[in-house]
Length: 340
Image (cartoon, rainbow, N blue to C red):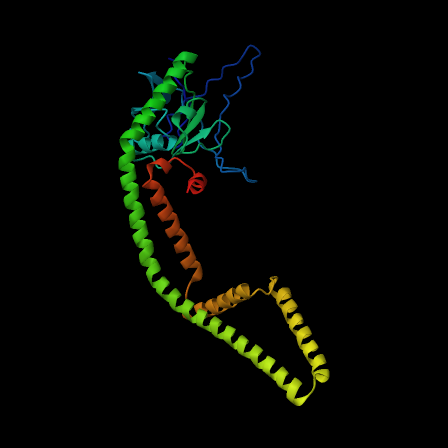
Protein backbone atom coordinates (compact mmCIF):
# COMPACT_ATOMS: atom_id res chain seq x y z
CA UNK A 1 0.00 0.00 0.00
CA UNK A 2 1.15 3.56 -0.70
CA UNK A 3 1.66 5.73 2.35
CA UNK A 4 0.13 9.19 2.39
CA UNK A 5 2.69 11.88 2.92
CA UNK A 6 2.15 15.20 4.72
CA UNK A 7 4.26 18.29 4.92
CA UNK A 8 4.22 21.27 7.43
CA UNK A 9 6.50 23.37 9.62
CA UNK A 10 5.34 24.00 13.19
CA UNK A 11 5.10 27.61 14.26
CA UNK A 12 6.65 28.51 17.60
CA UNK A 13 9.36 25.80 17.63
CA UNK A 14 12.57 26.78 19.49
CA UNK A 15 15.07 27.97 16.89
CA UNK A 16 18.17 25.88 16.32
CA UNK A 17 21.67 27.25 16.44
CA UNK A 18 22.45 29.47 13.53
CA UNK A 19 25.05 28.07 11.16
CA UNK A 20 26.99 30.13 8.68
CA UNK A 21 25.13 30.10 5.41
CA UNK A 22 26.43 27.91 2.64
CA UNK A 23 25.60 29.09 -0.84
CA UNK A 24 25.47 26.50 -3.58
CA UNK A 25 25.42 27.89 -7.05
CA UNK A 26 24.32 26.31 -10.27
CA UNK A 27 26.28 26.02 -13.41
CA UNK A 28 25.84 29.72 -14.07
CA UNK A 29 26.93 30.64 -10.54
CA UNK A 30 23.49 31.87 -9.49
CA UNK A 31 22.02 30.72 -6.16
CA UNK A 32 19.17 28.20 -6.47
CA UNK A 33 15.65 29.55 -5.96
CA UNK A 34 14.16 29.16 -2.49
CA UNK A 35 11.73 26.29 -1.95
CA UNK A 36 8.14 27.37 -2.43
CA UNK A 37 6.01 27.61 0.70
CA UNK A 38 2.39 26.49 0.75
CA UNK A 39 -0.01 28.45 2.94
CA UNK A 40 -3.52 27.37 3.93
CA UNK A 41 -6.17 30.07 4.16
CA UNK A 42 -9.31 29.59 6.17
CA UNK A 43 -12.46 29.53 4.08
CA UNK A 44 -15.64 30.66 5.90
CA UNK A 45 -18.55 30.55 3.50
CA UNK A 46 -17.78 33.11 0.82
CA UNK A 47 -14.42 34.84 0.39
CA UNK A 48 -14.40 38.22 2.03
CA UNK A 49 -12.76 41.39 0.88
CA UNK A 50 -9.94 41.25 3.40
CA UNK A 51 -6.90 39.01 3.71
CA UNK A 52 -7.22 35.96 5.97
CA UNK A 53 -4.70 34.94 8.59
CA UNK A 54 -2.51 32.15 7.16
CA UNK A 55 -1.72 28.99 9.05
CA UNK A 56 1.87 27.87 9.40
CA UNK A 57 3.73 26.30 6.51
CA UNK A 58 3.53 22.59 5.80
CA UNK A 59 5.41 20.15 8.02
CA UNK A 60 7.79 17.42 6.82
CA UNK A 61 6.30 14.58 4.87
CA UNK A 62 6.66 11.98 7.62
CA UNK A 63 4.32 13.79 10.04
CA UNK A 64 1.04 12.31 8.74
CA UNK A 65 0.78 8.95 7.00
CA UNK A 66 -2.15 6.78 5.97
CA UNK A 67 -1.81 3.01 5.56
CA UNK A 68 -4.42 0.31 5.08
CA UNK A 69 -4.33 -2.62 7.48
CA UNK A 70 -6.85 -5.41 7.34
CA UNK A 71 -8.89 -3.28 4.96
CA UNK A 72 -9.14 -0.28 7.35
CA UNK A 73 -7.22 2.99 6.99
CA UNK A 74 -4.74 3.76 9.78
CA UNK A 75 -3.87 7.45 10.15
CA UNK A 76 -0.57 8.03 11.95
CA UNK A 77 0.36 11.51 13.15
CA UNK A 78 2.54 13.19 15.77
CA UNK A 79 0.77 14.55 18.84
CA UNK A 80 1.94 18.13 19.46
CA UNK A 81 2.10 17.98 23.27
CA UNK A 82 4.02 14.73 23.77
CA UNK A 83 5.75 14.74 20.34
CA UNK A 84 4.99 11.06 19.90
CA UNK A 85 3.46 9.13 17.04
CA UNK A 86 -0.11 7.89 17.46
CA UNK A 87 -2.20 5.66 15.21
CA UNK A 88 -5.91 6.11 14.64
CA UNK A 89 -7.84 3.30 12.98
CA UNK A 90 -11.05 4.56 11.40
CA UNK A 91 -14.04 2.85 9.88
CA UNK A 92 -14.61 4.77 6.65
CA UNK A 93 -18.26 3.86 6.19
CA UNK A 94 -19.21 4.70 9.80
CA UNK A 95 -16.73 7.23 11.18
CA UNK A 96 -17.26 10.89 10.35
CA UNK A 97 -14.72 13.69 10.18
CA UNK A 98 -16.06 15.16 13.42
CA UNK A 99 -15.66 11.83 15.25
CA UNK A 100 -12.08 11.47 14.01
CA UNK A 101 -11.19 14.99 15.17
CA UNK A 102 -12.79 14.34 18.57
CA UNK A 103 -10.66 11.18 18.94
CA UNK A 104 -7.53 13.19 18.15
CA UNK A 105 -8.41 15.89 20.70
CA UNK A 106 -9.32 13.25 23.28
CA UNK A 107 -5.93 11.60 22.83
CA UNK A 108 -4.01 14.89 23.31
CA UNK A 109 -5.62 17.41 25.66
CA UNK A 110 -3.25 20.11 24.41
CA UNK A 111 -5.00 20.26 21.03
CA UNK A 112 -7.33 23.23 21.18
CA UNK A 113 -8.26 23.29 17.52
CA UNK A 114 -8.58 20.53 14.94
CA UNK A 115 -10.14 21.02 11.51
CA UNK A 116 -10.02 19.54 8.04
CA UNK A 117 -9.87 21.60 4.85
CA UNK A 118 -10.02 20.68 1.21
CA UNK A 119 -7.16 21.55 -1.12
CA UNK A 120 -9.03 24.63 -2.36
CA UNK A 121 -9.26 26.02 1.19
CA UNK A 122 -12.91 25.20 1.89
CA UNK A 123 -13.71 23.65 5.26
CA UNK A 124 -14.88 20.03 5.33
CA UNK A 125 -18.06 19.47 7.34
CA UNK A 126 -17.87 17.38 10.51
CA UNK A 127 -20.71 15.22 9.20
CA UNK A 128 -18.68 14.08 6.17
CA UNK A 129 -17.82 10.38 6.18
CA UNK A 130 -14.15 9.45 6.26
CA UNK A 131 -14.75 7.29 3.19
CA UNK A 132 -15.55 10.44 1.21
CA UNK A 133 -12.66 12.40 2.75
CA UNK A 134 -10.07 9.73 1.87
CA UNK A 135 -10.97 9.88 -1.82
CA UNK A 136 -9.00 13.11 -2.35
CA UNK A 137 -6.12 15.04 -0.85
CA UNK A 138 -6.90 17.25 2.14
CA UNK A 139 -5.26 19.41 4.80
CA UNK A 140 -5.42 18.58 8.50
CA UNK A 141 -5.06 21.62 10.78
CA UNK A 142 -4.03 20.96 14.40
CA UNK A 143 -3.72 24.10 16.51
CA UNK A 144 -1.68 26.41 14.24
CA UNK A 145 -0.09 23.71 12.11
CA UNK A 146 -1.38 22.51 8.76
CA UNK A 147 -0.61 19.03 7.44
CA UNK A 148 -0.98 18.23 3.76
CA UNK A 149 -2.27 14.67 3.50
CA UNK A 150 -2.39 12.54 0.36
CA UNK A 151 -4.36 9.33 0.95
CA UNK A 152 -3.12 6.24 -0.89
CA UNK A 153 -5.01 5.07 -3.93
CA UNK A 154 -7.06 1.97 -3.23
CA UNK A 155 -7.39 -0.78 -5.77
CA UNK A 156 -10.70 -0.61 -7.56
CA UNK A 157 -13.04 -3.45 -6.81
CA UNK A 158 -14.47 -5.57 -9.57
CA UNK A 159 -18.15 -5.18 -10.38
CA UNK A 160 -19.01 -8.58 -8.88
CA UNK A 161 -17.12 -7.84 -5.68
CA UNK A 162 -18.70 -4.39 -5.44
CA UNK A 163 -22.18 -5.87 -5.87
CA UNK A 164 -21.42 -8.44 -3.19
CA UNK A 165 -20.24 -5.70 -0.82
CA UNK A 166 -23.43 -3.71 -1.42
CA UNK A 167 -25.52 -6.79 -0.64
CA UNK A 168 -23.59 -7.34 2.58
CA UNK A 169 -24.08 -3.69 3.58
CA UNK A 170 -27.81 -3.96 2.92
CA UNK A 171 -28.04 -7.18 4.93
CA UNK A 172 -26.16 -5.67 7.87
CA UNK A 173 -28.45 -2.61 7.78
CA UNK A 174 -31.59 -4.76 7.81
CA UNK A 175 -30.24 -6.87 10.69
CA UNK A 176 -29.40 -3.74 12.66
CA UNK A 177 -32.88 -2.32 12.10
CA UNK A 178 -34.52 -5.62 13.05
CA UNK A 179 -32.52 -5.89 16.27
CA UNK A 180 -32.84 -2.30 17.44
CA UNK A 181 -36.15 -1.13 16.00
CA UNK A 182 -38.25 -2.31 18.94
CA UNK A 183 -35.99 -0.61 21.49
CA UNK A 184 -36.05 2.56 19.41
CA UNK A 185 -39.84 2.46 19.23
CA UNK A 186 -40.18 2.02 23.00
CA UNK A 187 -37.74 4.86 23.69
CA UNK A 188 -39.44 7.11 21.16
CA UNK A 189 -42.88 6.30 22.58
CA UNK A 190 -41.72 7.28 26.07
CA UNK A 191 -40.35 10.57 24.75
CA UNK A 192 -43.60 11.33 22.93
CA UNK A 193 -45.71 10.49 26.00
CA UNK A 194 -43.57 12.77 28.16
CA UNK A 195 -43.88 15.51 25.56
CA UNK A 196 -47.66 15.06 25.46
CA UNK A 197 -47.91 15.30 29.24
CA UNK A 198 -45.78 18.44 29.28
CA UNK A 199 -47.84 20.08 26.52
CA UNK A 200 -51.11 19.21 28.23
CA UNK A 201 -49.88 20.70 31.50
CA UNK A 202 -49.01 23.93 29.71
CA UNK A 203 -52.31 23.97 27.83
CA UNK A 204 -54.54 23.33 30.86
CA UNK A 205 -54.56 26.93 32.26
CA UNK A 206 -54.75 28.34 28.74
CA UNK A 207 -57.70 26.11 27.91
CA UNK A 208 -59.56 27.26 31.03
CA UNK A 209 -58.91 30.92 30.21
CA UNK A 210 -59.91 30.35 26.58
CA UNK A 211 -63.16 28.72 27.67
CA UNK A 212 -64.08 31.75 29.78
CA UNK A 213 -63.22 34.17 26.97
CA UNK A 214 -65.16 32.06 24.45
CA UNK A 215 -68.26 32.02 26.62
CA UNK A 216 -68.09 35.80 27.06
CA UNK A 217 -67.57 36.46 23.33
CA UNK A 218 -70.34 34.04 22.37
CA UNK A 219 -72.77 35.70 24.80
CA UNK A 220 -72.00 39.16 23.41
CA UNK A 221 -72.41 37.93 19.83
CA UNK A 222 -75.78 36.31 20.61
CA UNK A 223 -76.88 39.48 22.40
CA UNK A 224 -75.95 41.54 19.34
CA UNK A 225 -77.99 39.25 17.09
CA UNK A 226 -81.05 39.59 19.31
CA UNK A 227 -80.59 43.37 19.40
CA UNK A 228 -80.54 43.41 15.60
CA UNK A 229 -83.75 41.38 15.49
CA UNK A 230 -85.38 43.73 17.97
CA UNK A 231 -84.38 46.79 15.92
CA UNK A 232 -85.72 45.24 12.72
CA UNK A 233 -89.00 44.38 14.47
CA UNK A 234 -89.23 47.92 15.83
CA UNK A 235 -88.57 49.35 12.39
CA UNK A 236 -91.29 47.20 10.82
CA UNK A 237 -93.79 48.13 13.52
CA UNK A 238 -92.98 51.83 13.18
CA UNK A 239 -93.44 51.75 9.40
CA UNK A 240 -96.79 49.93 9.76
CA UNK A 241 -98.03 52.42 12.36
CA UNK A 242 -97.00 55.39 10.20
CA UNK A 243 -98.56 53.86 7.09
CA UNK A 244 -102.04 52.88 8.44
CA UNK A 245 -102.60 55.14 11.43
CA UNK A 246 -100.65 58.36 10.93
CA UNK A 247 -100.00 58.81 7.22
CA UNK A 248 -100.98 56.96 4.06
CA UNK A 249 -99.04 54.62 1.76
CA UNK A 250 -98.52 57.43 -0.74
CA UNK A 251 -96.47 59.31 1.85
CA UNK A 252 -94.62 56.34 3.35
CA UNK A 253 -93.67 54.70 0.03
CA UNK A 254 -90.70 57.07 -0.62
CA UNK A 255 -89.63 56.61 3.02
CA UNK A 256 -89.50 52.82 2.68
CA UNK A 257 -87.63 53.20 -0.62
CA UNK A 258 -84.87 55.26 0.96
CA UNK A 259 -84.70 52.89 3.92
CA UNK A 260 -84.19 49.97 1.51
CA UNK A 261 -81.59 51.93 -0.47
CA UNK A 262 -79.78 52.83 2.75
CA UNK A 263 -79.67 49.15 3.77
CA UNK A 264 -78.16 48.28 0.37
CA UNK A 265 -75.51 50.97 0.86
CA UNK A 266 -74.72 49.58 4.31
CA UNK A 267 -74.24 46.06 2.89
CA UNK A 268 -71.99 47.40 0.12
CA UNK A 269 -69.93 49.34 2.69
CA UNK A 270 -69.49 46.09 4.65
CA UNK A 271 -68.13 44.43 1.50
CA UNK A 272 -65.75 47.35 0.84
CA UNK A 273 -64.36 47.22 4.37
CA UNK A 274 -64.17 43.44 4.87
CA UNK A 275 -63.86 42.16 1.26
CA UNK A 276 -66.55 39.61 2.13
CA UNK A 277 -70.22 39.25 1.28
CA UNK A 278 -72.67 40.01 4.04
CA UNK A 279 -73.61 36.43 4.88
CA UNK A 280 -75.12 35.95 8.30
CA UNK A 281 -72.92 33.02 9.51
CA UNK A 282 -69.74 34.76 8.32
CA UNK A 283 -70.79 38.06 9.86
CA UNK A 284 -71.54 36.27 13.15
CA UNK A 285 -68.12 34.57 13.17
CA UNK A 286 -66.39 37.84 12.39
CA UNK A 287 -68.12 39.59 15.26
CA UNK A 288 -67.31 36.67 17.56
CA UNK A 289 -63.60 36.92 16.72
CA UNK A 290 -63.72 40.66 17.29
CA UNK A 291 -65.09 40.18 20.80
CA UNK A 292 -62.74 37.23 21.44
CA UNK A 293 -59.52 39.10 20.60
CA UNK A 294 -60.60 42.20 22.44
CA UNK A 295 -61.35 40.12 25.55
CA UNK A 296 -58.07 38.21 25.14
CA UNK A 297 -56.13 41.45 25.17
CA UNK A 298 -57.75 42.58 28.40
CA UNK A 299 -57.28 39.14 30.03
CA UNK A 300 -53.62 38.85 28.80
CA UNK A 301 -54.36 35.65 26.90
CA UNK A 302 -51.48 34.81 24.49
CA UNK A 303 -53.26 33.53 21.39
CA UNK A 304 -50.04 32.85 19.44
CA UNK A 305 -48.56 30.72 22.21
CA UNK A 306 -51.82 28.82 22.57
CA UNK A 307 -51.92 28.07 18.83
CA UNK A 308 -48.26 26.96 18.87
CA UNK A 309 -48.89 24.57 21.76
CA UNK A 310 -51.95 23.15 20.01
CA UNK A 311 -49.93 22.55 16.84
CA UNK A 312 -47.15 20.82 18.80
CA UNK A 313 -49.75 18.69 20.60
CA UNK A 314 -51.37 17.64 17.33
CA UNK A 315 -47.97 16.83 15.82
CA UNK A 316 -46.96 14.74 18.83
CA UNK A 317 -50.26 12.85 18.78
CA UNK A 318 -49.85 12.14 15.06
CA UNK A 319 -46.28 10.90 15.61
CA UNK A 320 -47.45 8.65 18.44
CA UNK A 321 -50.26 7.29 16.28
CA UNK A 322 -47.83 6.47 13.48
CA UNK A 323 -45.38 4.92 15.94
CA UNK A 324 -48.03 2.57 17.29
CA UNK A 325 -48.96 1.42 13.79
CA UNK A 326 -45.94 -0.49 12.42
CA UNK A 327 -47.41 -0.67 8.91
CA UNK A 328 -47.42 3.14 8.70
CA UNK A 329 -43.88 3.69 9.95
CA UNK A 330 -42.31 3.91 6.50
CA UNK A 331 -45.18 5.68 4.75
CA UNK A 332 -45.27 9.43 4.11
CA UNK A 333 -47.89 11.42 6.00
CA UNK A 334 -49.79 12.22 2.81
CA UNK A 335 -50.22 8.51 1.96
CA UNK A 336 -51.35 7.77 5.53
CA UNK A 337 -53.98 10.52 5.36
CA UNK A 338 -55.20 9.23 1.99
CA UNK A 339 -55.52 5.70 3.40
CA UNK A 340 -57.38 6.97 6.46
